[in-house]
Length: 551
Image 1 (cartoon, rainbow, N blue to C red):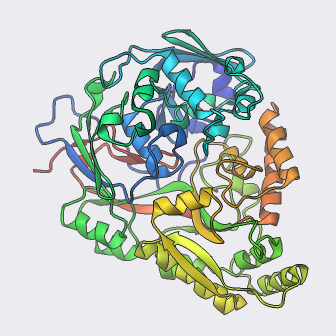
Image 2 (cartoon, rainbow, N blue to C red):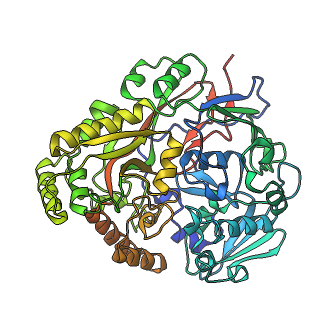
Protein backbone atom coordinates (compact mmCIF):
# COMPACT_ATOMS: atom_id res chain seq x y z
CA UNK A 1 0.00 0.00 0.00
CA UNK A 2 3.04 2.23 0.05
CA UNK A 3 4.71 4.77 -2.12
CA UNK A 4 3.78 4.39 -5.78
CA UNK A 5 1.29 6.19 -8.00
CA UNK A 6 0.59 6.23 -11.72
CA UNK A 7 -1.01 9.40 -13.12
CA UNK A 8 -1.62 9.48 -16.82
CA UNK A 9 -1.94 13.14 -17.61
CA UNK A 10 0.59 15.82 -16.76
CA UNK A 11 -2.31 18.07 -15.84
CA UNK A 12 -3.37 15.64 -13.12
CA UNK A 13 0.18 15.45 -11.83
CA UNK A 14 -0.07 19.16 -11.10
CA UNK A 15 -3.60 19.23 -9.75
CA UNK A 16 -4.14 15.87 -8.08
CA UNK A 17 -4.15 15.59 -4.32
CA UNK A 18 -3.19 11.96 -4.63
CA UNK A 19 0.50 12.70 -5.08
CA UNK A 20 2.24 11.63 -1.89
CA UNK A 21 5.11 14.04 -2.41
CA UNK A 22 2.74 16.99 -2.39
CA UNK A 23 1.16 16.17 0.95
CA UNK A 24 2.42 16.68 4.51
CA UNK A 25 4.53 13.80 5.79
CA UNK A 26 3.03 11.45 8.34
CA UNK A 27 5.00 11.66 11.61
CA UNK A 28 7.14 8.71 12.66
CA UNK A 29 6.95 7.01 9.28
CA UNK A 30 7.63 3.29 9.15
CA UNK A 31 10.99 1.96 7.98
CA UNK A 32 11.31 1.39 4.24
CA UNK A 33 9.85 -1.97 3.26
CA UNK A 34 12.43 -4.70 2.59
CA UNK A 35 12.80 -6.02 -0.92
CA UNK A 36 10.58 -9.00 -1.69
CA UNK A 37 12.43 -12.32 -2.04
CA UNK A 38 13.34 -13.34 -5.56
CA UNK A 39 12.99 -17.04 -4.75
CA UNK A 40 9.98 -18.80 -3.27
CA UNK A 41 10.19 -18.57 0.57
CA UNK A 42 10.98 -21.90 2.23
CA UNK A 43 8.85 -21.33 5.34
CA UNK A 44 5.08 -21.70 5.63
CA UNK A 45 3.61 -18.47 4.32
CA UNK A 46 0.88 -18.06 6.92
CA UNK A 47 -0.01 -14.91 8.86
CA UNK A 48 -2.31 -14.48 11.88
CA UNK A 49 -3.74 -11.03 12.62
CA UNK A 50 -6.55 -9.48 14.65
CA UNK A 51 -9.71 -8.25 12.91
CA UNK A 52 -10.93 -6.87 16.28
CA UNK A 53 -14.63 -7.60 15.80
CA UNK A 54 -17.29 -9.10 13.57
CA UNK A 55 -18.14 -6.82 10.65
CA UNK A 56 -21.64 -5.47 10.07
CA UNK A 57 -21.64 -6.31 6.36
CA UNK A 58 -19.38 -7.40 3.53
CA UNK A 59 -21.78 -6.24 0.86
CA UNK A 60 -19.07 -4.00 -0.52
CA UNK A 61 -21.38 -1.30 -1.83
CA UNK A 62 -22.68 -0.99 1.75
CA UNK A 63 -19.36 -1.15 3.65
CA UNK A 64 -18.55 1.83 5.86
CA UNK A 65 -16.33 0.70 8.75
CA UNK A 66 -12.54 0.45 8.52
CA UNK A 67 -12.64 -3.32 9.17
CA UNK A 68 -15.04 -3.89 6.30
CA UNK A 69 -13.01 -1.74 3.91
CA UNK A 70 -9.82 -3.58 4.86
CA UNK A 71 -11.33 -6.96 4.02
CA UNK A 72 -12.50 -5.52 0.70
CA UNK A 73 -8.93 -4.52 -0.10
CA UNK A 74 -7.65 -8.02 0.64
CA UNK A 75 -10.12 -9.99 -1.47
CA UNK A 76 -11.22 -7.47 -4.10
CA UNK A 77 -9.72 -4.95 -6.48
CA UNK A 78 -11.28 -1.89 -8.03
CA UNK A 79 -10.20 -0.01 -11.12
CA UNK A 80 -7.38 1.34 -8.99
CA UNK A 81 -5.75 0.13 -5.77
CA UNK A 82 -4.54 2.13 -2.79
CA UNK A 83 -0.76 2.47 -2.83
CA UNK A 84 -0.39 4.14 0.56
CA UNK A 85 0.06 7.70 1.73
CA UNK A 86 -2.98 8.97 -0.15
CA UNK A 87 -1.88 7.61 -3.53
CA UNK A 88 -3.18 4.96 -5.91
CA UNK A 89 -1.82 2.66 -8.58
CA UNK A 90 -3.54 0.80 -11.42
CA UNK A 91 -5.70 -2.08 -10.32
CA UNK A 92 -8.06 -3.88 -12.68
CA UNK A 93 -7.64 -0.83 -14.90
CA UNK A 94 -4.21 -1.25 -16.51
CA UNK A 95 -4.27 2.41 -17.53
CA UNK A 96 -6.65 5.35 -17.53
CA UNK A 97 -6.84 8.95 -18.66
CA UNK A 98 -8.97 12.04 -18.15
CA UNK A 99 -10.17 14.45 -20.83
CA UNK A 100 -8.54 17.92 -20.97
CA UNK A 101 -11.44 19.41 -18.98
CA UNK A 102 -11.14 16.67 -16.34
CA UNK A 103 -14.77 15.57 -16.69
CA UNK A 104 -14.50 12.37 -18.73
CA UNK A 105 -12.42 9.51 -17.37
CA UNK A 106 -11.69 6.43 -19.47
CA UNK A 107 -10.48 3.24 -17.81
CA UNK A 108 -8.86 0.43 -19.82
CA UNK A 109 -9.14 -2.95 -18.10
CA UNK A 110 -6.35 -5.50 -18.06
CA UNK A 111 -6.90 -9.25 -18.53
CA UNK A 112 -8.21 -10.09 -15.07
CA UNK A 113 -10.36 -12.93 -13.76
CA UNK A 114 -12.80 -13.63 -11.00
CA UNK A 115 -11.95 -16.43 -8.56
CA UNK A 116 -14.12 -18.82 -10.63
CA UNK A 117 -11.96 -18.15 -13.70
CA UNK A 118 -14.40 -15.94 -15.64
CA UNK A 119 -13.14 -12.56 -16.95
CA UNK A 120 -13.68 -9.26 -15.13
CA UNK A 121 -15.46 -6.88 -17.52
CA UNK A 122 -16.38 -3.22 -17.68
CA UNK A 123 -20.02 -4.19 -17.20
CA UNK A 124 -19.11 -5.68 -13.79
CA UNK A 125 -18.06 -2.22 -12.69
CA UNK A 126 -21.12 -0.51 -14.13
CA UNK A 127 -23.40 -3.08 -12.46
CA UNK A 128 -21.67 -2.59 -9.09
CA UNK A 129 -21.78 1.19 -9.30
CA UNK A 130 -25.43 1.24 -10.35
CA UNK A 131 -26.13 -1.09 -7.46
CA UNK A 132 -24.48 1.46 -5.14
CA UNK A 133 -26.86 4.23 -6.25
CA UNK A 134 -29.97 2.06 -6.58
CA UNK A 135 -32.83 4.18 -5.15
CA UNK A 136 -34.41 1.05 -3.67
CA UNK A 137 -31.38 0.36 -1.44
CA UNK A 138 -29.84 3.60 -0.11
CA UNK A 139 -26.34 3.08 1.31
CA UNK A 140 -24.00 5.10 3.53
CA UNK A 141 -21.51 5.88 0.77
CA UNK A 142 -23.95 6.38 -2.10
CA UNK A 143 -22.91 10.04 -2.18
CA UNK A 144 -19.38 9.02 -3.20
CA UNK A 145 -20.74 8.51 -6.72
CA UNK A 146 -22.66 11.78 -6.85
CA UNK A 147 -19.90 13.45 -8.87
CA UNK A 148 -21.00 11.25 -11.79
CA UNK A 149 -23.54 12.83 -14.12
CA UNK A 150 -27.11 12.02 -12.97
CA UNK A 151 -25.95 9.57 -10.27
CA UNK A 152 -27.53 11.63 -7.50
CA UNK A 153 -30.66 12.21 -9.54
CA UNK A 154 -31.00 8.47 -10.24
CA UNK A 155 -30.52 7.58 -6.57
CA UNK A 156 -33.35 9.99 -5.72
CA UNK A 157 -35.67 8.68 -8.42
CA UNK A 158 -35.32 11.80 -10.56
CA UNK A 159 -33.43 10.24 -13.51
CA UNK A 160 -33.37 6.94 -15.32
CA UNK A 161 -30.52 4.42 -15.30
CA UNK A 162 -29.57 5.15 -18.91
CA UNK A 163 -29.04 8.84 -18.03
CA UNK A 164 -26.26 8.09 -15.52
CA UNK A 165 -22.81 8.95 -16.85
CA UNK A 166 -21.38 5.41 -16.73
CA UNK A 167 -20.82 3.91 -20.17
CA UNK A 168 -19.54 0.47 -21.12
CA UNK A 169 -17.66 1.09 -24.36
CA UNK A 170 -16.69 -2.57 -24.64
CA UNK A 171 -15.72 -5.41 -22.28
CA UNK A 172 -12.37 -3.76 -21.55
CA UNK A 173 -13.31 -0.07 -21.57
CA UNK A 174 -15.36 1.96 -19.09
CA UNK A 175 -16.12 5.66 -19.66
CA UNK A 176 -17.28 7.85 -16.76
CA UNK A 177 -18.61 11.39 -17.16
CA UNK A 178 -18.47 13.72 -14.14
CA UNK A 179 -20.47 16.86 -13.38
CA UNK A 180 -17.28 18.79 -12.64
CA UNK A 181 -13.56 17.94 -12.52
CA UNK A 182 -12.58 15.78 -9.54
CA UNK A 183 -8.80 15.59 -9.44
CA UNK A 184 -8.82 12.62 -7.07
CA UNK A 185 -11.44 10.54 -8.89
CA UNK A 186 -8.87 7.84 -9.58
CA UNK A 187 -8.40 7.55 -5.81
CA UNK A 188 -12.15 7.23 -5.32
CA UNK A 189 -12.30 4.23 -7.65
CA UNK A 190 -10.08 2.26 -5.24
CA UNK A 191 -12.82 2.48 -2.60
CA UNK A 192 -15.23 -0.38 -1.83
CA UNK A 193 -18.34 1.50 -2.98
CA UNK A 194 -16.84 1.38 -6.48
CA UNK A 195 -16.41 -2.40 -6.36
CA UNK A 196 -17.26 -4.52 -9.40
CA UNK A 197 -20.12 -7.00 -9.01
CA UNK A 198 -20.80 -9.71 -11.54
CA UNK A 199 -24.48 -9.58 -12.37
CA UNK A 200 -25.10 -13.27 -13.02
CA UNK A 201 -23.52 -14.31 -9.72
CA UNK A 202 -25.26 -11.57 -7.72
CA UNK A 203 -28.64 -12.53 -9.14
CA UNK A 204 -27.94 -16.20 -8.46
CA UNK A 205 -27.12 -15.77 -4.73
CA UNK A 206 -29.46 -12.83 -4.11
CA UNK A 207 -29.52 -11.46 -0.55
CA UNK A 208 -26.87 -13.99 0.51
CA UNK A 209 -24.16 -12.19 -1.50
CA UNK A 210 -20.91 -12.09 0.53
CA UNK A 211 -22.43 -13.69 3.63
CA UNK A 212 -20.58 -17.03 3.48
CA UNK A 213 -17.52 -18.41 1.65
CA UNK A 214 -19.78 -19.90 -1.03
CA UNK A 215 -21.36 -16.55 -1.84
CA UNK A 216 -18.14 -14.55 -2.28
CA UNK A 217 -16.71 -13.98 -5.73
CA UNK A 218 -13.24 -12.42 -5.49
CA UNK A 219 -11.06 -10.68 -8.03
CA UNK A 220 -8.32 -9.64 -5.60
CA UNK A 221 -5.17 -11.17 -4.08
CA UNK A 222 -7.03 -13.39 -1.59
CA UNK A 223 -10.37 -15.13 -1.26
CA UNK A 224 -12.45 -16.22 1.72
CA UNK A 225 -11.88 -19.84 2.71
CA UNK A 226 -13.97 -19.86 5.90
CA UNK A 227 -15.95 -17.51 8.11
CA UNK A 228 -16.81 -18.45 11.68
CA UNK A 229 -18.94 -15.54 12.83
CA UNK A 230 -17.77 -13.70 15.95
CA UNK A 231 -14.61 -15.82 15.90
CA UNK A 232 -12.43 -15.75 12.76
CA UNK A 233 -12.15 -15.39 9.01
CA UNK A 234 -9.58 -17.31 6.96
CA UNK A 235 -8.27 -15.94 3.66
CA UNK A 236 -6.23 -17.92 1.14
CA UNK A 237 -4.31 -16.84 -1.92
CA UNK A 238 -6.46 -16.39 -5.02
CA UNK A 239 -4.64 -18.17 -7.89
CA UNK A 240 -6.81 -16.36 -10.45
CA UNK A 241 -5.64 -12.89 -9.34
CA UNK A 242 -3.90 -11.16 -12.25
CA UNK A 243 -0.80 -10.45 -10.10
CA UNK A 244 -0.82 -13.72 -8.15
CA UNK A 245 2.90 -14.18 -8.84
CA UNK A 246 3.63 -11.22 -6.52
CA UNK A 247 1.59 -12.63 -3.63
CA UNK A 248 3.77 -14.64 -1.22
CA UNK A 249 1.33 -15.43 1.58
CA UNK A 250 -0.74 -18.59 1.17
CA UNK A 251 -3.03 -18.12 4.16
CA UNK A 252 -4.10 -15.32 6.47
CA UNK A 253 -6.15 -16.01 9.59
CA UNK A 254 -8.05 -13.03 11.00
CA UNK A 255 -9.18 -13.52 14.59
CA UNK A 256 -11.83 -11.37 16.25
CA UNK A 257 -10.35 -10.24 19.58
CA UNK A 258 -11.98 -7.16 21.08
CA UNK A 259 -10.01 -6.98 24.34
CA UNK A 260 -6.62 -5.34 23.83
CA UNK A 261 -5.15 -7.15 26.87
CA UNK A 262 -6.10 -10.50 25.32
CA UNK A 263 -4.62 -9.44 22.00
CA UNK A 264 -1.35 -8.42 23.68
CA UNK A 265 -1.06 -11.70 25.60
CA UNK A 266 -1.72 -13.72 22.44
CA UNK A 267 0.91 -11.72 20.55
CA UNK A 268 3.48 -12.33 23.28
CA UNK A 269 2.58 -16.04 23.30
CA UNK A 270 3.18 -16.29 19.54
CA UNK A 271 -0.50 -16.76 18.65
CA UNK A 272 -0.65 -13.46 16.74
CA UNK A 273 1.85 -11.90 14.36
CA UNK A 274 0.62 -8.32 14.80
CA UNK A 275 -1.15 -6.09 17.31
CA UNK A 276 -3.65 -3.40 16.35
CA UNK A 277 -2.28 -0.99 18.95
CA UNK A 278 -0.11 -0.87 22.06
CA UNK A 279 -0.65 1.43 25.01
CA UNK A 280 2.33 2.80 26.95
CA UNK A 281 2.35 -0.05 29.47
CA UNK A 282 2.17 -2.71 26.75
CA UNK A 283 4.87 -1.01 24.72
CA UNK A 284 7.20 -1.08 27.72
CA UNK A 285 6.37 -4.72 28.45
CA UNK A 286 6.74 -5.95 24.87
CA UNK A 287 9.35 -8.68 24.43
CA UNK A 288 8.55 -9.89 20.89
CA UNK A 289 9.06 -8.26 17.51
CA UNK A 290 9.40 -4.53 16.95
CA UNK A 291 7.33 -1.46 17.81
CA UNK A 292 6.31 0.93 15.06
CA UNK A 293 4.39 4.20 15.20
CA UNK A 294 2.18 5.89 12.64
CA UNK A 295 -0.80 8.22 12.30
CA UNK A 296 -3.85 6.23 11.32
CA UNK A 297 -5.41 9.46 10.06
CA UNK A 298 -8.48 9.28 12.27
CA UNK A 299 -10.18 11.81 14.49
CA UNK A 300 -12.28 10.58 17.43
CA UNK A 301 -15.22 12.46 18.84
CA UNK A 302 -18.56 12.33 20.56
CA UNK A 303 -21.55 12.09 18.23
CA UNK A 304 -24.41 14.16 19.63
CA UNK A 305 -27.88 13.24 18.43
CA UNK A 306 -29.06 16.67 17.30
CA UNK A 307 -32.72 15.58 17.47
CA UNK A 308 -32.45 14.64 21.16
CA UNK A 309 -34.65 16.79 23.42
CA UNK A 310 -31.60 18.17 25.28
CA UNK A 311 -28.77 17.74 22.81
CA UNK A 312 -30.66 19.60 20.10
CA UNK A 313 -29.29 22.72 21.80
CA UNK A 314 -25.87 23.62 20.45
CA UNK A 315 -24.73 25.40 23.61
CA UNK A 316 -25.26 22.25 25.64
CA UNK A 317 -23.34 20.25 23.03
CA UNK A 318 -20.54 22.82 23.22
CA UNK A 319 -20.57 22.77 27.03
CA UNK A 320 -20.14 18.99 27.08
CA UNK A 321 -17.32 19.25 24.53
CA UNK A 322 -15.43 22.02 26.33
CA UNK A 323 -15.69 20.26 29.71
CA UNK A 324 -13.57 17.28 28.57
CA UNK A 325 -9.95 17.05 29.73
CA UNK A 326 -8.36 15.46 26.67
CA UNK A 327 -4.83 15.61 28.02
CA UNK A 328 -5.86 13.56 31.04
CA UNK A 329 -7.85 11.10 28.92
CA UNK A 330 -4.81 10.51 26.70
CA UNK A 331 -2.06 10.42 29.32
CA UNK A 332 -3.79 8.87 32.32
CA UNK A 333 -6.52 6.67 30.88
CA UNK A 334 -5.64 5.59 27.33
CA UNK A 335 -1.85 5.94 27.71
CA UNK A 336 -1.65 6.24 23.94
CA UNK A 337 0.43 8.54 21.68
CA UNK A 338 -2.62 10.59 20.68
CA UNK A 339 -2.94 14.36 20.22
CA UNK A 340 -5.83 16.39 21.71
CA UNK A 341 -8.31 17.51 19.03
CA UNK A 342 -9.90 20.94 19.30
CA UNK A 343 -10.97 20.83 15.64
CA UNK A 344 -12.24 18.25 13.18
CA UNK A 345 -10.00 17.86 10.11
CA UNK A 346 -6.85 15.80 10.83
CA UNK A 347 -3.66 17.88 11.27
CA UNK A 348 -0.96 15.85 9.56
CA UNK A 349 -2.24 14.01 6.51
CA UNK A 350 -4.74 16.44 4.95
CA UNK A 351 -2.94 19.14 2.92
CA UNK A 352 -4.05 22.73 2.39
CA UNK A 353 -4.62 24.32 -1.02
CA UNK A 354 -0.89 24.51 -1.73
CA UNK A 355 -0.63 20.71 -1.46
CA UNK A 356 2.25 21.03 1.04
CA UNK A 357 1.13 22.84 4.19
CA UNK A 358 -1.14 20.86 6.53
CA UNK A 359 -4.74 22.07 6.48
CA UNK A 360 -4.73 22.31 10.27
CA UNK A 361 -1.87 24.84 10.39
CA UNK A 362 -4.11 27.77 9.44
CA UNK A 363 -6.37 27.21 12.44
CA UNK A 364 -5.06 24.67 14.99
CA UNK A 365 -8.16 24.74 17.18
CA UNK A 366 -11.55 26.27 17.90
CA UNK A 367 -11.64 25.98 21.71
CA UNK A 368 -9.43 25.24 24.70
CA UNK A 369 -8.98 21.82 26.20
CA UNK A 370 -10.66 21.34 29.60
CA UNK A 371 -12.23 24.84 29.53
CA UNK A 372 -14.60 24.18 32.42
CA UNK A 373 -15.52 27.80 33.15
CA UNK A 374 -16.67 28.46 29.58
CA UNK A 375 -18.44 25.08 29.60
CA UNK A 376 -20.45 26.07 32.69
CA UNK A 377 -21.48 29.36 31.07
CA UNK A 378 -22.56 27.58 27.89
CA UNK A 379 -24.52 25.00 29.88
CA UNK A 380 -26.38 27.73 31.76
CA UNK A 381 -27.14 29.55 28.50
CA UNK A 382 -28.36 26.36 26.84
CA UNK A 383 -30.64 25.45 29.75
CA UNK A 384 -32.20 28.92 29.61
CA UNK A 385 -32.82 28.50 25.89
CA UNK A 386 -34.55 25.15 26.54
CA UNK A 387 -36.47 26.51 29.52
CA UNK A 388 -35.18 23.85 31.91
CA UNK A 389 -33.52 24.02 35.34
CA UNK A 390 -31.78 20.64 35.32
CA UNK A 391 -30.35 18.17 32.82
CA UNK A 392 -31.95 14.70 32.82
CA UNK A 393 -29.68 11.65 32.75
CA UNK A 394 -28.42 10.84 29.25
CA UNK A 395 -26.62 7.84 27.74
CA UNK A 396 -23.35 7.46 25.86
CA UNK A 397 -23.04 4.44 23.57
CA UNK A 398 -19.61 2.83 23.42
CA UNK A 399 -17.91 -0.43 22.45
CA UNK A 400 -18.60 -3.20 24.94
CA UNK A 401 -14.97 -4.23 25.37
CA UNK A 402 -13.13 -3.13 28.51
CA UNK A 403 -11.14 -0.44 26.68
CA UNK A 404 -14.20 1.15 25.10
CA UNK A 405 -15.99 1.27 28.43
CA UNK A 406 -12.91 2.67 30.18
CA UNK A 407 -12.71 5.63 27.78
CA UNK A 408 -16.44 6.35 28.04
CA UNK A 409 -16.29 6.08 31.82
CA UNK A 410 -13.59 8.76 31.89
CA UNK A 411 -15.91 11.12 30.00
CA UNK A 412 -18.78 10.15 32.30
CA UNK A 413 -16.71 11.20 35.33
CA UNK A 414 -15.60 14.48 33.73
CA UNK A 415 -19.16 15.49 32.90
CA UNK A 416 -20.29 14.69 36.43
CA UNK A 417 -17.38 16.53 38.06
CA UNK A 418 -17.31 19.58 35.79
CA UNK A 419 -20.98 20.07 34.86
CA UNK A 420 -22.91 17.87 37.33
CA UNK A 421 -24.43 16.02 34.36
CA UNK A 422 -25.28 12.35 34.89
CA UNK A 423 -24.41 10.13 31.93
CA UNK A 424 -25.03 6.39 31.79
CA UNK A 425 -22.78 4.07 29.78
CA UNK A 426 -24.44 2.01 27.06
CA UNK A 427 -21.89 -0.64 25.98
CA UNK A 428 -22.70 -2.58 22.80
CA UNK A 429 -20.77 -4.66 20.22
CA UNK A 430 -18.94 -2.58 17.63
CA UNK A 431 -21.23 -3.75 14.81
CA UNK A 432 -24.31 -2.76 16.84
CA UNK A 433 -22.83 0.65 17.65
CA UNK A 434 -22.19 1.39 13.98
CA UNK A 435 -25.68 0.21 13.00
CA UNK A 436 -27.37 2.33 15.67
CA UNK A 437 -25.29 5.37 14.82
CA UNK A 438 -26.44 5.11 11.23
CA UNK A 439 -30.06 4.92 12.42
CA UNK A 440 -29.57 7.89 14.82
CA UNK A 441 -30.63 5.56 17.65
CA UNK A 442 -28.59 7.03 20.51
CA UNK A 443 -28.18 10.05 22.79
CA UNK A 444 -24.41 10.29 22.45
CA UNK A 445 -21.95 7.86 20.91
CA UNK A 446 -18.18 7.44 21.12
CA UNK A 447 -17.19 7.50 17.45
CA UNK A 448 -14.33 8.06 15.03
CA UNK A 449 -13.65 8.77 11.38
CA UNK A 450 -10.66 8.07 9.15
CA UNK A 451 -9.97 9.66 5.75
CA UNK A 452 -10.96 7.96 2.52
CA UNK A 453 -8.99 10.30 0.25
CA UNK A 454 -6.45 13.13 0.81
CA UNK A 455 -8.69 16.19 0.74
CA UNK A 456 -10.54 18.04 3.57
CA UNK A 457 -13.78 17.06 1.86
CA UNK A 458 -13.23 13.47 3.03
CA UNK A 459 -14.19 14.75 6.50
CA UNK A 460 -16.39 17.74 5.82
CA UNK A 461 -19.02 16.29 3.50
CA UNK A 462 -20.05 13.80 6.19
CA UNK A 463 -22.43 16.28 7.74
CA UNK A 464 -24.54 17.50 4.86
CA UNK A 465 -28.25 17.14 5.51
CA UNK A 466 -29.34 13.54 4.99
CA UNK A 467 -25.80 12.30 4.32
CA UNK A 468 -25.28 8.55 4.63
CA UNK A 469 -22.62 9.00 7.33
CA UNK A 470 -24.28 11.94 9.08
CA UNK A 471 -24.82 10.00 12.31
CA UNK A 472 -25.73 13.05 14.47
CA UNK A 473 -28.54 13.84 11.98
CA UNK A 474 -27.16 17.37 11.73
CA UNK A 475 -28.61 19.92 9.33
CA UNK A 476 -27.53 23.45 8.50
CA UNK A 477 -28.51 24.97 5.11
CA UNK A 478 -25.51 27.31 5.08
CA UNK A 479 -23.16 24.39 5.67
CA UNK A 480 -24.85 22.36 2.94
CA UNK A 481 -24.53 25.23 0.48
CA UNK A 482 -20.80 25.68 1.20
CA UNK A 483 -20.07 21.99 0.72
CA UNK A 484 -22.04 21.89 -2.53
CA UNK A 485 -20.34 25.02 -3.85
CA UNK A 486 -16.88 23.78 -2.85
CA UNK A 487 -17.38 20.53 -4.73
CA UNK A 488 -18.26 22.44 -7.90
CA UNK A 489 -15.56 25.13 -7.55
CA UNK A 490 -12.65 24.64 -10.02
CA UNK A 491 -10.46 27.28 -8.35
CA UNK A 492 -8.57 25.44 -5.63
CA UNK A 493 -7.98 28.50 -3.41
CA UNK A 494 -11.67 29.43 -3.48
CA UNK A 495 -12.67 25.82 -2.88
CA UNK A 496 -10.49 25.57 0.20
CA UNK A 497 -11.77 28.86 1.57
CA UNK A 498 -15.32 27.50 1.30
CA UNK A 499 -14.33 24.32 3.10
CA UNK A 500 -12.66 26.33 5.87
CA UNK A 501 -15.86 28.33 6.38
CA UNK A 502 -17.76 25.03 6.51
CA UNK A 503 -15.50 23.74 9.29
CA UNK A 504 -16.05 27.05 11.14
CA UNK A 505 -19.80 26.43 11.04
CA UNK A 506 -19.43 22.80 12.08
CA UNK A 507 -17.31 23.67 15.09
CA UNK A 508 -19.74 26.41 16.12
CA UNK A 509 -22.79 24.14 15.86
CA UNK A 510 -20.83 21.22 17.41
CA UNK A 511 -22.87 18.19 16.29
CA UNK A 512 -19.68 16.32 17.18
CA UNK A 513 -17.35 16.98 20.11
CA UNK A 514 -13.73 16.37 19.00
CA UNK A 515 -11.58 14.31 21.39
CA UNK A 516 -8.25 13.35 19.82
CA UNK A 517 -6.32 12.67 16.65
CA UNK A 518 -5.17 9.08 16.80
CA UNK A 519 -1.60 7.90 16.44
CA UNK A 520 -0.70 4.31 17.13
CA UNK A 521 2.16 2.24 18.42
CA UNK A 522 1.81 -1.33 17.25
CA UNK A 523 3.77 -4.53 17.34
CA UNK A 524 4.75 -6.75 14.44
CA UNK A 525 6.85 -9.90 14.65
CA UNK A 526 10.37 -9.65 13.26
CA UNK A 527 9.84 -12.47 10.76
CA UNK A 528 6.92 -10.67 9.07
CA UNK A 529 8.34 -8.73 6.12
CA UNK A 530 6.57 -6.18 3.93
CA UNK A 531 3.75 -5.59 6.46
CA UNK A 532 2.54 -1.99 6.48
CA UNK A 533 0.05 0.39 8.11
CA UNK A 534 -1.35 3.50 6.44
CA UNK A 535 -3.19 6.69 7.38
CA UNK A 536 -5.81 6.16 4.69
CA UNK A 537 -8.26 3.28 4.57
CA UNK A 538 -7.45 0.46 4.21
CA UNK A 539 -5.16 0.70 7.22
CA UNK A 540 -3.67 -2.82 7.56
CA UNK A 541 -1.74 -3.91 4.48
CA UNK A 542 -0.29 -7.40 4.20
CA UNK A 543 -0.96 -8.13 0.53
CA UNK A 544 2.70 -8.18 -0.43
CA UNK A 545 4.00 -9.41 2.94
CA UNK A 546 5.90 -12.65 3.48
CA UNK A 547 7.33 -14.76 6.30
CA UNK A 548 11.11 -15.05 6.58
CA UNK A 549 13.25 -16.19 9.52
CA UNK A 550 10.46 -17.57 11.71
CA UNK A 551 11.99 -21.02 12.10
